[in-house]
Image (cartoon, rainbow, N blue to C red; front, side, top):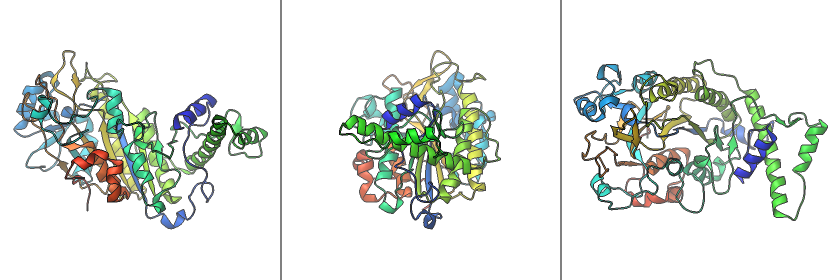
Length: 455
């Protein structure tokens, strides 16, 4: 239904929202009784870097391991003196960031940002040797962009297209559920799509106020009344009934989001320019409004980037990793600063993910190839930051973490995507008894979560 409604909205060219079950109680914004829950707000923001961000040039060893890194990465290696050094040590090791991510160093120093080393989809724990020998359970469709995007976001390769964020929201205790819980700021949906609920689309260019010539905030306008009447059509025909129902929900969602956006104030922080900056700026603006109106739990998906860097990974071109990480560093730091300024320091966790990692060995075109395990980061007040969670892999080609039979440096994850998702979903309020319903493969893991958050 979400897809049908999205196409309906696109065809009308006006409203860019689809998904919540209708207007709330107060001012058309809040769920009934929402005011009492204003202080109990939690939001997960997933920043998904499309294309497969190269984690090897995101988090880099600065100790003796840098020589091994340089030897394996060759022309892709970042010089040690160019790295943005992270203070202290993690697991007895020293690390630095790609210089474009220098704006994130203060968050790490304030212990509100942590890295997650060598994470990725896993059916069950597996060693690099087992992967090289094609033993054990391997996730399906490895190295495929579209499939890995969906699997990272929770697609279980069963006959549904839901994601772990959407499923978790549906299984929260009843008092934490509400219509406007799952929100996308871009075209990707899997993470926030549930089995029964729907997805709202938050636009970054204005508010979804109009349906064609109808002004949705002018209920007396004959054109607005005309589009409203379509939502009230009665029909025994299933398709006609679904059409009217989806039309009505789209109208309600558009009104709700318009009022939310018009109540929001743009944050003063410098997010930079471009699509990612606009998306995170808009999200930072509306989060306090959602909280003030009593929406207690939300999951947001922000997909962005062209990180499929088979060629020209370094340099100043707009699609190089260097340039794109500069946009990530600036916008992410500004987003965190805006949340803190808005009094939401403990309310929001942002997780960076990507399709998959990339090979340690460079490709022939000055880039890298599709791989598996990758380095992510998470930030926000609840994050137990200033560290690297998990086991940082050896860059040695054919080494103990290389699952590629040809020794190209495709690291086998030691942290499962499901373990990361379960950690965040539990913080959101998902009962332990529902973990395996949201993350079916967790049944194969003794450890269900990772040490990412403050207890």
